[in-house]
Image (cartoon, rainbow, N blue to C red; front, side, top):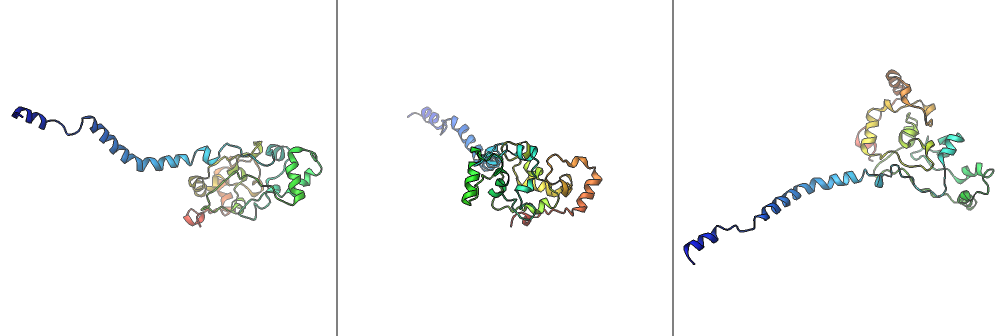
Length: 226
């Protein structure tokens, strides 16, 4: 091998030039993965597929809230009778349903599951619409007796043929309300009123209502995480 040939081989790169681009891309991906994975999971948890927002849940009986709430004027508490005294709002017993449907629509096939459950002494198994993580504590009675209306969290169920979730109930959703409850409070007489709005009250009236209801929601961790 001549001197000229040796110097030519020594000047050649150890790897092809295109490997520089591959190396830079690998570095970029390595730096992006720790950031992108949490971001993707954060976005995924807020998709309607996970939260169920706007997606009606199938139920064992086609219960139309528009007819019962808006047309017949049945109050929320008539069916969800535990909402004022318990952490859970409760679901109506079949005896509540049969209080009316033992006299009307007595032969309806759509109500056959209700009649069957009633005569068997078994509850109807409803599919949950609103879900909270197991590590979150929520008390309906505290909120309802504190001036938070049903529509604030559940939306206009009087306009829903099938109930669906209207809020994701993220930590941000709850904390925003706890930090500024005055904008969401209402007189206790209007708790189940779907059409009442706090916009009817001026800033002074809202502040006065907050004092009357002693609205002092906490924002420390143990309020919801116990």
